[in-house]
Length: 169
Image 1 (cartoon, one colour):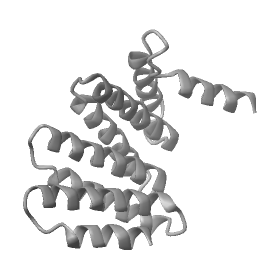
Image 2 (cartoon, rainbow, N blue to C red):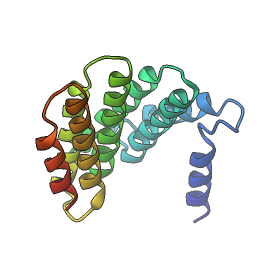
Image 3 (spheres, one colour):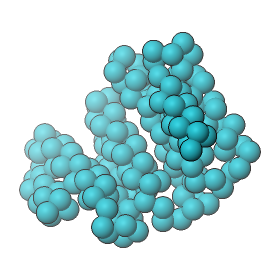
Protein backbone atom coordinates (compact mmCIF):
# COMPACT_ATOMS: atom_id res chain seq x y z
CA UNK A 1 0.00 0.00 0.00
CA UNK A 2 1.00 3.63 -0.28
CA UNK A 3 1.48 4.01 3.48
CA UNK A 4 3.77 0.94 3.56
CA UNK A 5 5.92 2.39 0.77
CA UNK A 6 6.06 5.72 2.61
CA UNK A 7 7.13 3.96 5.82
CA UNK A 8 9.89 2.07 3.99
CA UNK A 9 11.01 5.27 2.27
CA UNK A 10 11.08 7.11 5.58
CA UNK A 11 13.10 4.29 7.12
CA UNK A 12 15.64 4.38 4.32
CA UNK A 13 16.09 8.15 4.73
CA UNK A 14 15.93 8.35 8.52
CA UNK A 15 19.41 8.27 9.91
CA UNK A 16 20.90 8.49 6.41
CA UNK A 17 24.14 10.46 6.51
CA UNK A 18 23.30 11.89 3.08
CA UNK A 19 20.19 13.53 4.51
CA UNK A 20 21.05 16.63 6.57
CA UNK A 21 20.17 15.89 10.19
CA UNK A 22 19.35 12.26 9.40
CA UNK A 23 21.46 10.95 12.30
CA UNK A 24 19.30 12.96 14.69
CA UNK A 25 15.91 12.76 13.00
CA UNK A 26 15.76 8.98 12.46
CA UNK A 27 16.17 7.92 16.08
CA UNK A 28 14.10 10.84 17.37
CA UNK A 29 11.19 9.83 15.16
CA UNK A 30 11.45 6.25 16.37
CA UNK A 31 11.40 7.44 19.99
CA UNK A 32 8.22 9.44 19.29
CA UNK A 33 6.64 6.32 17.82
CA UNK A 34 7.50 4.33 20.92
CA UNK A 35 6.09 7.06 23.15
CA UNK A 36 2.78 6.88 21.29
CA UNK A 37 2.56 3.08 21.55
CA UNK A 38 5.14 1.64 24.00
CA UNK A 39 4.32 -2.01 23.25
CA UNK A 40 4.41 -1.66 19.48
CA UNK A 41 6.72 -4.26 17.97
CA UNK A 42 7.55 -2.22 14.87
CA UNK A 43 8.34 0.91 16.91
CA UNK A 44 10.75 -1.05 19.11
CA UNK A 45 12.46 -2.70 16.15
CA UNK A 46 12.82 0.47 14.10
CA UNK A 47 14.10 2.46 17.09
CA UNK A 48 16.72 -0.22 17.74
CA UNK A 49 17.58 -0.37 14.05
CA UNK A 50 17.93 3.42 13.83
CA UNK A 51 20.31 3.54 16.81
CA UNK A 52 22.27 0.54 15.51
CA UNK A 53 22.75 2.46 12.26
CA UNK A 54 23.89 5.56 14.14
CA UNK A 55 26.37 3.40 16.09
CA UNK A 56 27.73 1.90 12.87
CA UNK A 57 28.20 5.31 11.31
CA UNK A 58 30.00 6.45 14.46
CA UNK A 59 32.34 3.44 14.11
CA UNK A 60 32.91 4.28 10.46
CA UNK A 61 33.88 7.86 11.39
CA UNK A 62 36.13 6.76 14.24
CA UNK A 63 33.73 8.18 16.84
CA UNK A 64 32.50 6.40 19.97
CA UNK A 65 29.59 4.10 19.03
CA UNK A 66 28.87 3.09 22.65
CA UNK A 67 26.03 5.55 23.42
CA UNK A 68 24.06 4.74 20.26
CA UNK A 69 24.74 1.00 20.58
CA UNK A 70 23.49 1.05 24.17
CA UNK A 71 20.32 2.83 23.05
CA UNK A 72 19.83 0.25 20.30
CA UNK A 73 20.17 -2.59 22.81
CA UNK A 74 17.75 -0.82 25.17
CA UNK A 75 15.17 -0.42 22.39
CA UNK A 76 15.34 -4.11 21.45
CA UNK A 77 15.19 -5.12 25.12
CA UNK A 78 12.14 -2.91 25.76
CA UNK A 79 10.50 -4.38 22.69
CA UNK A 80 11.17 -7.89 23.98
CA UNK A 81 9.66 -7.00 27.36
CA UNK A 82 6.39 -6.21 25.59
CA UNK A 83 6.75 -8.86 22.86
CA UNK A 84 8.71 -11.80 24.34
CA UNK A 85 10.38 -14.21 21.95
CA UNK A 86 10.03 -12.18 18.75
CA UNK A 87 12.89 -13.32 16.48
CA UNK A 88 13.20 -9.92 14.78
CA UNK A 89 13.96 -8.22 18.10
CA UNK A 90 16.14 -11.08 19.35
CA UNK A 91 18.27 -11.00 16.21
CA UNK A 92 18.58 -7.21 16.34
CA UNK A 93 19.71 -7.53 19.94
CA UNK A 94 22.18 -10.32 19.09
CA UNK A 95 23.78 -8.24 16.32
CA UNK A 96 23.95 -5.18 18.55
CA UNK A 97 25.55 -7.13 21.40
CA UNK A 98 28.10 -8.63 19.00
CA UNK A 99 28.98 -5.14 17.78
CA UNK A 100 29.31 -3.97 21.39
CA UNK A 101 31.65 -6.90 22.06
CA UNK A 102 33.78 -5.92 19.06
CA UNK A 103 33.83 -2.33 20.29
CA UNK A 104 34.92 -3.45 23.77
CA UNK A 105 37.73 -5.53 22.24
CA UNK A 106 38.83 -2.53 20.16
CA UNK A 107 39.05 -0.43 23.35
CA UNK A 108 41.14 -3.09 25.08
CA UNK A 109 38.24 -4.19 27.29
CA UNK A 110 36.86 -7.68 27.78
CA UNK A 111 34.32 -8.51 25.08
CA UNK A 112 32.92 -11.51 26.94
CA UNK A 113 30.01 -9.84 28.78
CA UNK A 114 28.58 -8.61 25.46
CA UNK A 115 29.47 -11.86 23.68
CA UNK A 116 27.54 -13.87 26.26
CA UNK A 117 24.52 -11.60 25.77
CA UNK A 118 24.79 -11.93 21.98
CA UNK A 119 24.94 -15.72 22.23
CA UNK A 120 21.94 -15.77 24.57
CA UNK A 121 19.85 -13.57 22.25
CA UNK A 122 20.81 -15.58 19.14
CA UNK A 123 20.03 -18.84 20.92
CA UNK A 124 16.61 -17.50 21.93
CA UNK A 125 16.01 -16.44 18.31
CA UNK A 126 16.77 -19.99 17.16
CA UNK A 127 14.35 -21.42 19.72
CA UNK A 128 11.66 -18.94 18.63
CA UNK A 129 12.20 -19.50 14.90
CA UNK A 130 14.21 -22.67 14.19
CA UNK A 131 13.43 -22.49 10.46
CA UNK A 132 14.92 -18.99 10.05
CA UNK A 133 18.63 -18.65 9.28
CA UNK A 134 19.21 -15.32 11.05
CA UNK A 135 19.57 -16.72 14.56
CA UNK A 136 22.04 -19.36 13.40
CA UNK A 137 24.09 -16.76 11.52
CA UNK A 138 24.14 -14.44 14.55
CA UNK A 139 25.11 -17.30 16.86
CA UNK A 140 27.88 -18.41 14.51
CA UNK A 141 29.17 -14.84 14.24
CA UNK A 142 29.30 -14.35 18.02
CA UNK A 143 30.98 -17.71 18.58
CA UNK A 144 33.54 -17.15 15.82
CA UNK A 145 34.48 -13.79 17.30
CA UNK A 146 34.72 -15.37 20.75
CA UNK A 147 37.10 -17.99 19.32
CA UNK A 148 39.25 -15.28 17.72
CA UNK A 149 39.48 -13.28 20.94
CA UNK A 150 40.32 -16.37 22.97
CA UNK A 151 43.03 -17.31 20.50
CA UNK A 152 44.48 -13.78 20.43
CA UNK A 153 44.72 -13.87 24.23
CA UNK A 154 46.58 -17.19 24.06
CA UNK A 155 43.57 -19.32 24.94
CA UNK A 156 41.93 -22.24 23.22
CA UNK A 157 39.43 -20.97 20.69
CA UNK A 158 38.69 -24.44 19.30
CA UNK A 159 35.55 -25.09 21.39
CA UNK A 160 34.09 -21.72 20.38
CA UNK A 161 34.90 -22.15 16.69
CA UNK A 162 33.51 -25.69 16.78
CA UNK A 163 30.33 -24.23 18.26
CA UNK A 164 30.23 -21.63 15.50
CA UNK A 165 30.57 -24.29 12.82
CA UNK A 166 27.92 -26.43 14.47
CA UNK A 167 25.55 -23.45 14.62
CA UNK A 168 25.93 -22.84 10.90
CA UNK A 169 25.77 -26.45 9.70
